[in-house]
Length: 197
Image (cartoon, rainbow, N blue to C red; front, top):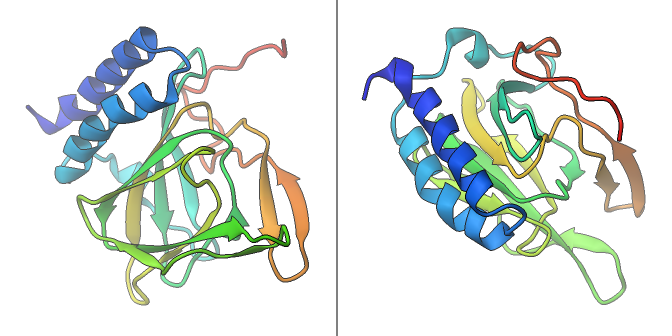
């Protein structure tokens, strides 16, 4: 397979999967996992414009937005030292490491209802995957594991993640803030606008 056709083949396979199993989170994750593993095993397909870092914050760049909002594929470009707040997704997602390395710390609610770190921080290396979902664990904080270089991960979500209302958490105070992330490339040509239902 040529590098030029790799992304197109992924999108075609994901479209068929979304058509075959609408709304079935487990089957979609199971079917999408090998597709993502294959995609991030090869680092020859990501357009240069989708690999550019920003000096102040990480970039969330839309690679493909399904016209029916069934899934979206995003390039996350992490500059040195950049990280997310503690946040959720409200839909399933598969994170694949393409270049560099990133660390993720899961959070869970304790018996008192407060958020606290759950388990140890995990490090993703190129070719490795992580899964998030409301049923499997959906709250985490992510950071570039490298202090001196850019890292890039590819994220597949079970919805148009740039348009979904989600939450940022401040575990120390219990504060919760609603947010919609949008995309760093706000005028991405394949992000179809839809009238509100």
